[in-house]
Length: 297
Image (cartoon, rainbow, N blue to C red; front, side, top):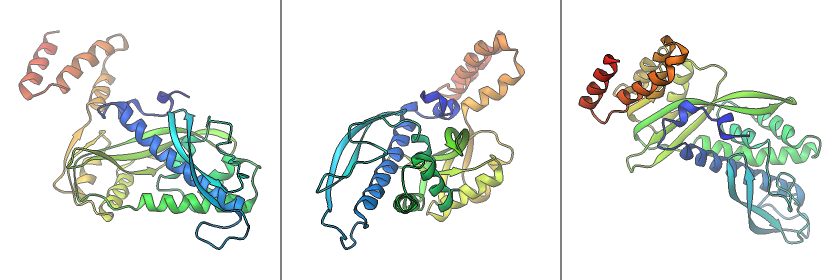
């Protein structure tokens, strides 16, 4: 699967590079895979970490392993046992390819999935290869980490927050379906970007984004200087109802795309190029000059 199969082009172009978002998704993916592996080891040994051992076998630290996914190569920590009898199923000892489950793992970290939903996804990943008890152990392990990540405190102020949706192709009930994950990315005062959260939603609406904004506020976010969004009806008013001092900027890609609706197909490429020169101008004077050039055509 290529990157463009599941990452929104519109959203990617709001970042300095698409690689920034890809790197974040790789971090979530790696985090989820490592927790699943820990759950597999718990089931293999028959007891949880820090619990009293029920066997003469025990945990023996971690080993590093490079794996390849649709997001590229990444390094993970694989838990080991003293007797070396643990052979992970999701990442076999002699294998380094993970295919078809990366998007599922990332989607698990989106708010909106219940514990039963997560367990069902685990069954989808493993099929009939694991017992119900083992599936439950793995689900418990990754669910604890998901809850911790979803509810972590946020900075009180972000300079810019980008909000949009990305589409994932995941397998569910033996079918490949599209799931939209809504994501908020904040620019911190130290200049670093941070993904504030992922949310699973069936339909994008101002009421849905109200729940997202409220969730971020509960986690400690007090103010956003600028929000960058699409032109969803009522979105700006929703933002102001939660963060009244925030200024909303419609993203350039959405502006150009919306304007292009009224242009015939053969002229769209040239039209978009001219529009981009206006919206990405370094200052107002340059934008006005680009607009004058556009009007002359």
